[in-house]
Length: 208
Image (tube, one colour):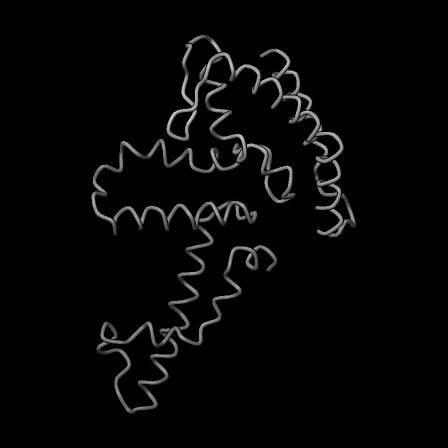
């Protein structure tokens, strides 16, 4: 598999050139990535495919639509994985938005893996969904350049509460009621309907 490793190293070097350039539109950026992959990366992927197909004839067999190892050695597991995921591993060649590996995703979900043992208490669908929502919010914030998601959420919460509180207080006074009473009975969902949530979206908040 030395030739495969060398080809992968070359692919990563070509992929390192796929960084946005100044004054480059998104269309130009995607076109440049596709050209780079078509001219430089695809021949290497084809070379890898030829090698893996040859090795597959020796160490794998097709059973039930899946490749399995018929001869176990130091590289049979890698060959089996490649043969079963071949199309998915080549998908990035046709879509400039897709990276050549899953490193970004794996780094993103790493905190969830670490938290897993401490999350055994979440034994309901609602509990797991809450964890997913929390991590989605935090990771989305980080991707959009918000270095302190907790501070962002704190400011958002303060702004939302202030909006609802002032609106509820004004409405109570207008109705001739004591605004300091029965605050817990206010319909905060209704009071928040005209709150401008758009400015607090991660991709807009960073621009403020």
